[in-house]
Length: 100
Image (cartoon, rainbow, N blue to C red; front, side, top):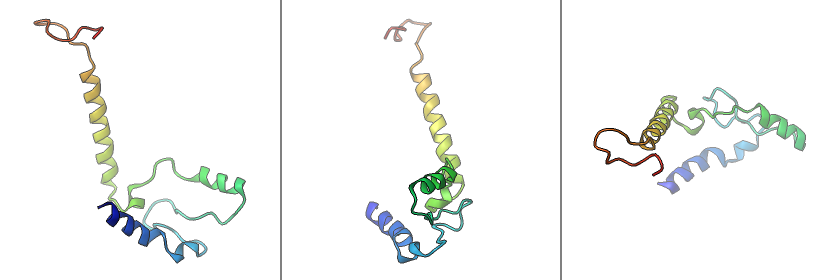
């Protein structure tokens, strides 16, 4: 599956078209993912600073609901971990102590 995924992304992103001026890696995404036109280090860093902090799932070919599913799973994992590390008290006294 990894090889198939690499081949799929390779066909999309590792192509002669990426060297054409103004080529957009995914025209369906909200932000235009393009290669900066400048070769100056400072301008490239400035361009990177304008990029969104959180990539849209559409840039990876996913539906927008994929982001919601990911965030729900992360939240559930966090809550489960928090509940698991809570001290067990009361009742029969068989749970772990606060020090354990």
